[in-house]
Image 1 (tube, rainbow, N blue to C red):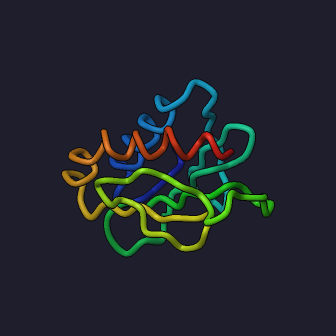
Image 2 (spheres, rainbow, N blue to C red; image 1 turned 90 degrees about the vertical axis):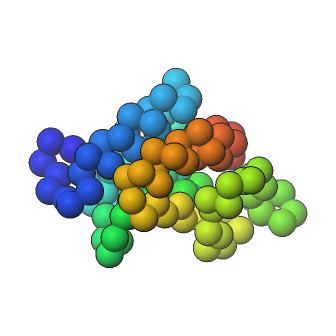
Length: 117
């Protein structure tokens, strides 16, 4: 993070703080040249190439996993998740205000997501 040059660095730093608070076992690292987060496997990677706002890809690591029928199931009443496949979703925040207003809902999604990792 110290070397990151990005127009949304303050939001990325706020995201980092939120991710590390979600679960005591969450650690940070760099995956695909972007700030990423893991427990036993990486599960979230910031999408630094997004044209605007802040984006995070939620995944289950690099290896294909056996999933329950229908894939990952996450309660998402705020409709934050944009499903890319049965085990991968993207969350996008257009502005810092949107991110700040969605923190509680995003935290709830993340707490469910890490249970699959």
